[in-house]
Amino acid sequence: MDLQAQIQLLIDNAPQDGVSPQLVTAIAPALSAIAQKLRHSQYYILQNMEEGWVLTTLSNRANPQLEKRVIYAFPTIQDVPARSSAGLDPRLIAAPMPVTHILFQLVAMEPVDSIVFFETPGTNTDSIEVRRVDLQNLIQQQLQQNRVKREIPPDLA
Image (tube, rainbow, N blue to C red):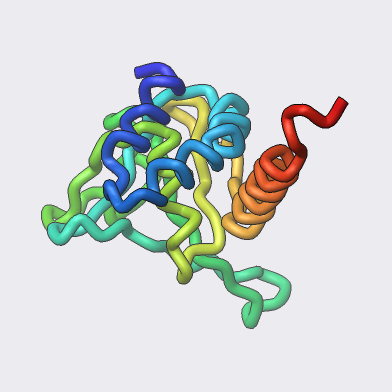
């Protein structure tokens, strides 16, 4: 599914509360901008039986007090068990998800610091980390730009 179709699906599935579809439409350029930097239109996310995403806490080797919580996104189903011993746990499943939906979810996932997208099947050395704070900042900029555009009257000239 291409990025436009993914964005349209997000808009269509947003709560019809008079605000959410417009909000998704407003942040769509930010989601697309990051998604275009990634190689795949969908990734596999490890989930528990309740569909909660599997979170991995990483510690800094030089400073173990520094930690970050990440979610791994795998390019193919075959890559899931190879990269995570948890992938062999029968209580976990690898669910395919459109890339824009993963990014959209990241915005609201408070305990998550980043999503690590593995880009090349069969290897874990080629990855792109998308930090939640960076995505939130990009979305904030997008919303501010939309606000400025709406405040400029069309008959300004």
